[in-house]
Image (cartoon, rainbow, N blue to C red; front, side):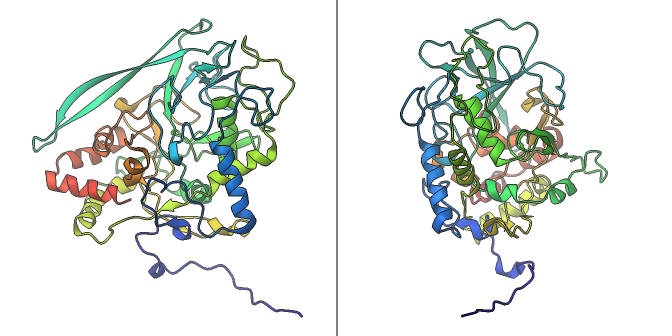
Length: 444
């Protein structure tokens, strides 16, 4: 029997059909428990769900050294043994170094730019330090973290404390000739990555204002980076400096650099050319089927819904957030492109609170290490969806690129540079109004 189906052109979903709770559009889940960041897109099923579950299993699997019957390939040098050991419950990591639950890695490079405009690798170390090694091999170094604490006051006299980290290296397996640059990176939450990947480049670039043409003091620029998957320059979307173009590249790089596991995308060991190199002819170690399953898992993690959106204090906090011009960078609404090949992320109105651009955040947060077009003081606007669940999912929660902020208040007060006026606005609010802003942010 022949069945005729009427085709309709894609159209914009009516704004009246959306509500403030649907942070991830159709891919929003109403889960405010410790599992809030680990849910599959609710629109998926069948074989799509099977691939997501397979990726979840690999994401949570601890890898071991080769040869081994299952999950071989760890090392010889690495930062952790599984994806989940850094992205705890698919959420934020722990800003520690050296232990099994640490989620902080250290970028390293020489000043200058390579042939593609990216950071310059340090001979014998590359672009990332691996502080662990398999039996019989030497870690590249030990990363040491020390904090200095200082108390400040808001305009109304209420005190708050900020802690400033200092990072040093010791036990380096070989000396480095010349001054090197370091930059710590904390494992971020995994939610909504597929939706962010689906936002058209044209929409992101439209928000850029690198010369501050409108005179509001906020610039913002797109970071264009070398993408190993396409062998071309692409818009950077992921990472604390928007230095990765796609989820596939992000996943393959994490396997290679964080765990020492090779793939068809990055078939050379991170230790290649170093004394730790194992010399085994077993690359690539992770099959394409598993690489793409983990990519699909990361691509299809849902976004938790907002909570208590009609609460008067939260609504007041949202107004103050906008009056402080925080929404200039933390843009409430983005729209994904029409994608007939991937309907789950197609034409979705989402509320991630990011413009996906990099901004000068001032000297306090500067790592003084450029990364393609992202300068020494530049950081990508972090998405705020799920922010209020950090403590629930990863108690305690940590904030900013290196986890120095232990509360949302501390994270706000670290904002400088293009965000200095917004930080000052928050600092000069009354206690009740600051608490309203925090209540709004905790509703996301």
